[in-house]
Structure formats: structure tokens, C-alpha cells
Image (tube, rainbow, N blue to C red):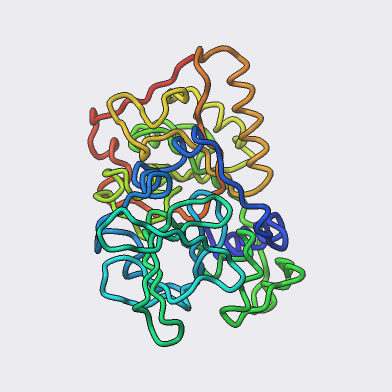
Amino acid sequence: MNQWAVAFLGVFAALAMGKGKNMADYKKPSQDELKKNLTFEQFNVTQNAGTEQPYKNAYWNHYEEGIYVDVVSGEPLFSSLDKYDSKCGWPSFSKPIEGVKIKELKDNKLAQERTEVRSGAADSHLGHVFNDGPPSTGLRYCINSAAMRFVPKDRLEAEGYGQYLPLFGKKKSEEAPSMATLGARFGKKYVPDPLSTATLAGGCFWGMEDILRKLPGVVDTRVGYTGGYEKNPTYETVKKGSSGHAEAIEIRFDPKKVSYEKILELFFKMHDPTTKNRQGNDVGTQYRSAIFYQDEDQKKVAERVKAAVQKSGKWKKDIVTEISPLLEFYAAEDYHQDYLVKNPGGYSCHFIRE
């Protein structure tokens, strides 16, 4: 995807998401939804007050600028500006974001009394707060990475958290610049990208790629990881199912030759969309069925195609395919790309069902 297409997606997302949310917008999903959308560790931490391992979690040494939100409801919790290394092996903050309500409860599970902290809207268990923090507040909020999702500074407005941009010395845009304006700023003429992109997950990405690459109108494919919270994931972390990411495929296609709808129709034929977190012998959230849309048009098409396939009766069970916004796609290691071309007869559980 060229830089102008990336810029366009960022502008579109900002317009689509609006000017931000208030705390009343953040609600706790049902237990069924939580079990469907959270990893085992995320569910165990937020719903059962579990604790992840120190030094083996996503954010203990993460210092990119942005905010951390509740993985359950999306409500804002902490800012990277208040994060520091407390040498405890978990993410530590001196305070929550100003105006954010964090619940504090006495925790008597251990001999030493502690104060548990939970999110205000979804009541998710986050971690604990201690009185041994830096001089600025004297507090140390020791939080489980699994209880949070990180939103980078440059994604705040696009994801509806634009009101927090001033924390990082940025003003929230009132009106998104046109593509012509963006081009003029860089002394270049904007040329629309003639290709479109689809991002799908439905089990082992080798088999998906081998089928989709042969569809007329598909120009290029690459396999990778998306849908999770871990930055720069590797196959070794994704295969354990703890990163939140799914094995996925990015499809670059010519919309004049094949429509996004046709690609999705093939997608629902090439894997079983009724098996939750599973395809064939591959089991885990990394093998879930998912459509990651890039804009509202793709979202509407995805919902329409999913509903039509369900109504058709071709699948006797309910379709469990999730439809979620695409946040970031990480390309998989080189040896995974074009795997079945390099290794004819290699493993695949994908085939076309008529």
C-alpha cells in the first residue's frame, strides 16, 4: 500500500469515528461476547482477577507514546506519560488519566492487605495500587498487560480518543485535510491507489493464501498477523494464542476485476465459519474466523455477505465470524510467505465448498 493510500485510510477513519466518546459510551459486553473475543489470559485476568507472569507480558517494558484502554470496554485508563519502570515486571503508572474513574477495593486474598484496582465502567480487574510510587504522586499502579489494549498517539483520533491528543502536544483536528491538501504539503500530486485491500482470517494462513491468490483480479497477497494487542508479533508468540492476533492474509485486488463482495463470498466457501477458534486440526484464537474491515463500506459489505450466507442454509450451525476494524497488519516471517508454492503438498485444511 503506498503512502497516499495509508494517509487516506487514516483520514477516513478519523472522520468515521467522530470526535470522541464519553464514559457512558463504554459498556461491558456479555459473558458470551467476552469469551469469544478475549484470549484465555485476558478473560482470566479481567473477569477472574488472575495475574499474568512478570516480565513475560506485552507492556512491562513498552514506552511508545499513547494511551492504554480497558481491553474489555475500551474505556481510557492510563497514559504513557505516566508510565515508568518500577522493576516489578508489570506495567507501572504513577496515576490514571485525569478524569478517569478507577475503582479501588481492599484485597484480602493474601496475608498482606493490598488495594485492588478495577475499571470504572466495565468493572474489569486491572491490578493493584501501592504507596511506593514516584514523588509526583507516591502511587504505583501495577497493572496486568492482559487487562489493557494500547492505542498509539497517531491512532487516537482515528479510534475515537481524540480528546487525549493534547496530552501529547497535539491538537485535535476539526476538519480532516483533503487528499489534494495532503499532497500539496509534501510537494506531490495525489494519485489515487487503483487497488483495494481485504484482510481476512480463517485458520492457517498458508491454505487461505493458496486459494485466494488464484482468484482473477487478485494482484498480490501476503500472510501475517492482526487483531491482537502485541506490537511486532512473531510466529512463536502468535502460535501460543496469547498475543490476541489471528493468522491472517492481506489481499491486494483490482476492484475493476473482482469485487470485495466476491472475495468474501469465496472466503465463506474456503473455510468453516461455524467453528469457534478452530479450523480443522488447528485450535486456538489465532485460528479464528474474522473479517477486518478498513472503512465503513467494507464493514457494510461484510455484514451483508455474512447475513446472506447464514440465511442461505449452506451452513447448518451459526456463523461465528467476527467483523472488526483493521488496526495494524504485521507481515509474517519470509518463510511463511507463498509457503505452499515453495512447499507443494504442504499442510492445508482449506478447500472450496459448493
